[in-house]
Image (spheres, rainbow, N blue to C red):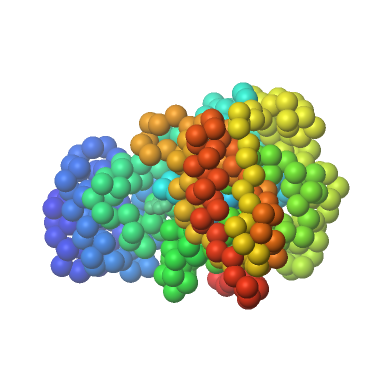
Length: 436
Ligand code: URA
């Protein structure tokens, strides 16, 4: 069928067959479908949506547009997690080594910062020598020997998504549930997973502020991934404050290392990381129930096994051998570090989480344009959680900046992003819904 016929049928709200979708995606991959046709197709899907079977067919066709990794030589369940993105969301950095220490193999394909959210790859590039684009052989060897590897998307993985995403980005067609579903899952399925756990974030620091919308996306992702043969569950989690007590790149790596050394016990971050580790262990079949799985993940953390895996991962991908022991030697510090003080006494009642993500970008820790260089040293740390009782003049966080002027702006900005109230806020659960 001609591409314009497929577009016309979708525009008219007719269901597309699996073969028709596969042909259209093959045309996108080999270039015979034009940019204008991709844009028209994306807009037709934006308006008319897709049935589940169509979304599964789109996902599989996009997965098959490039290499699909085969891990049959690895004698461990192959599992991964994906987050829709947030502020201070460094969960992947701790989760991959915990899961590996518990017996999973985690070939994690991660991304760079998007919009106001930070990116796992940008954070890892704070570590001198760490390569996010290793050769295929080194990636494979690292997953096999260490149990996990966190790297970037190669050109060979789901190339149709790369082309479609770039066109969606400039044609107002990003926010379509079937297109987001196929985009995220085609890359994950191409990584050869057997099971997947999704962190769908909701709140003022997430792409979705509305719980009902987040649930629609989570259900689409779970149903399509399961329909494609990958055992998948999702947790909808709160993103109304930074998840870690840091937001930035090197500061989030420092936070990750402190976490792996047991210095973040009892935090929201720890509860979320352990919940995702438990989901991964159960959905991969390594553990039968979530409580036993969480206890196992906790042992991997408290015994130091996960920290050891993280150290080996960094070294295998070109970083120093002793990052866990000597983080301060390797993570470049910002020239200026300034405290931010509470302007009044009361409780930290709410914060503008998206504003905190944007403030990191303004400090130089994220990009305004795709090819911008970033300053890994800058950001915020020692952020207090919402609900904390503070007195006027007490430190509520710190700014890491490249110079005095940026630090002064950052101090003012961060202070204005928190609201202090006389009443303690109701405590918010970090995990809102589980979907499987
Ligand atoms: N992330 C992706 O990879 N694709 C989307 O469409 C949205 C977020």
